[in-house]
Image 1 (tube, rainbow, N blue to C red):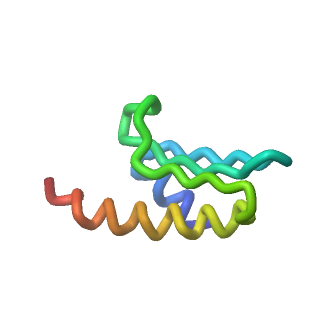
Image 2 (cartoon, rainbow, N blue to C red):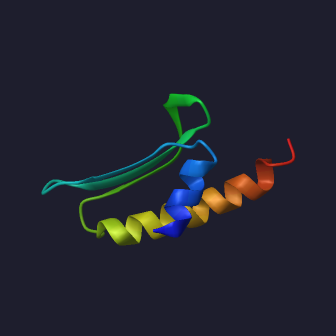
Length: 68
């Protein structure tokens, strides 16, 4: 997914977990993999839907914080 690759190029680790219990997407702070910016988790949503939601939220966060 090109947008995920772009987020990774910006040095924000992205983790996508899929299991029979729940699906989770996490996008972490630059150089701090102990503190996430976005975390989406669901027992009902598909991973791709969680990724889409997390990416939209990350873009909003990035646009607000890129000039800081």
